[in-house]
Image (cartoon, rainbow, N blue to C red; front, side, top):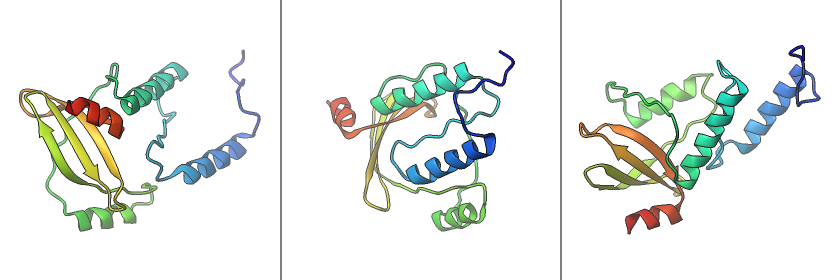
Length: 147
């Protein structure tokens, strides 16, 4: 192959336009994820998609690196203003953590969105209190982990 083979039949401009329309149609959906092409080959993108699926179904994510970020507190209103002014931010989503269940190493969170939808998260916590692994799960898996 000379590197010009593609699974797509559209021109690059048509493909970008179709991708943008698809992203806009799915924007705001609970499990809408965008996997970037930046700096990745197909195998890396496939692994990222598999990790997204693992998070959704409540499995551990393979070979994922995490980083701890420390920043000054920014109020919710200021954050909304900053994000809405940034043309690179397609949409924003804010939630309020309603309950957190802790053990030495595990945290389960139930977050309520402004539209009253609920999201559930599992976190593995290191000894220093930082989150080592986090993934979103559905209500069934959340209830199962509460037992």
